[in-house]
Length: 245
Image 1: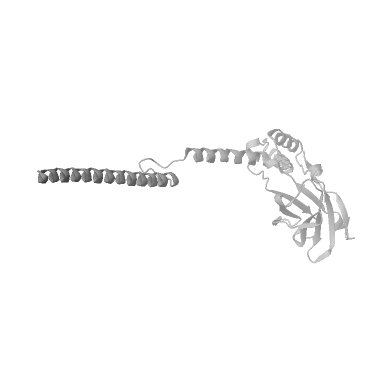
Image 2: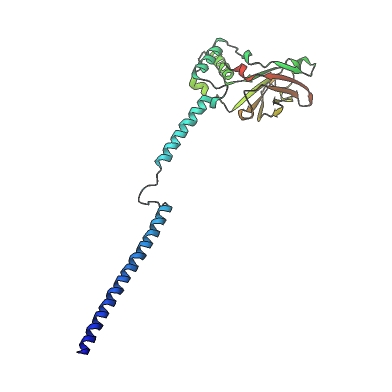
């Protein structure tokens, strides 16, 4: 009888141990699985894993690129708010003004002489012009109509209009323009041209200044001097607003 009771108690104890072991093992596996799942979820939310089954596209980026191109083109045409930027109406005005004069030169764009340190009349009466886009268009129109009896179009002149620089041309009545140097002075600061050109006849020098170097709200002066003798110079006043047409 005692043996039977001991056997029953041993069986019950063994059964309980199996149940407890199974329960603990299952609980442990569930907890570990939850932890691993949480880690995987954390990794997946912090790292963008590319979906290789789909083409890599970015519609927002593509749209922005197209928009930027449109904006850039619009800014180029408007001249970034540049003081001498031209509307289509202003271009037509310049075309018509040039067309009326077969020898248009743009006297309205001549700079006034401020001072001179030379008694040489050739040097003193040298003319200096500011070459705004309007002047360029009018001269082009004048040449086209005088030579070929044709009226320039807006699309045609847009090809050579540029708003990233402003140029000036100095003409001499005798001697060689290539012997001259030109610099701009604004609020005590000397601005050097980034490009100079001399025409084939030798009577004109043109210089280009970056618009980023100039404050068009403030007056400036253009100093034209002889390379061999900088003490001999002529200075011309520039009021940029006076040449807006």
